[in-house]
Image 1: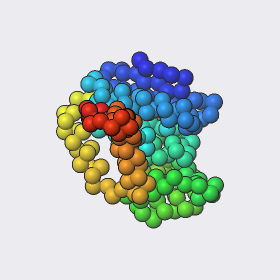
Image 2: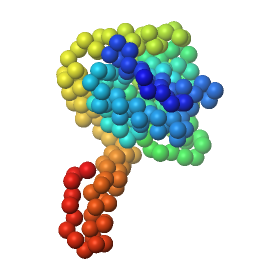
Image 3: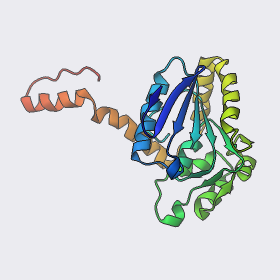
Image 4: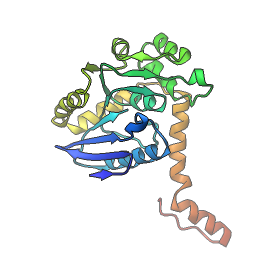
Length: 227
């Protein structure tokens, strides 16, 4: 089991359970939570024993994940938390869940929410983004943003039921179908920028960059290793 103060990761019966543990702040994101999520995403993606993921509480976290992700949500899903669940493959919501993206009302946006227009009807997405009004779980289900609504407190069990089905499906087929489906989704400018930042970060933080700069300063031929 992986655990820090704000994010936990546990493998139960071949299922990875990732939990945001910040109840006093309603599981709101902050830099420490985001960093914890990056760590568990990376662990999840490289694990051979956890073919899917469950969330309680709520990427772009800069960590590509090829395995399926189920979000089990409840309470208020606001701002960055909404962006996270929007990128999950399946969403199960407690009936009291409220989704809210108020950036148009507070005067700031990162732009990633624009990807919503290819996930639900365009007019509904624009209404949600521009008006900044909350959306109930029932409305989210009706427009296709949520896969299933369940009684409060049962969202994790419902997600685990789907997890058991996915665990017994062919992993290569599941990951391939996920990849194919994602390729059919047009990317927003912010999505493309996030991908570029992720790819460039690998270069900017690489040993090859350090070696190249050092070799240039020392006027010698660099010895690159592709890392």
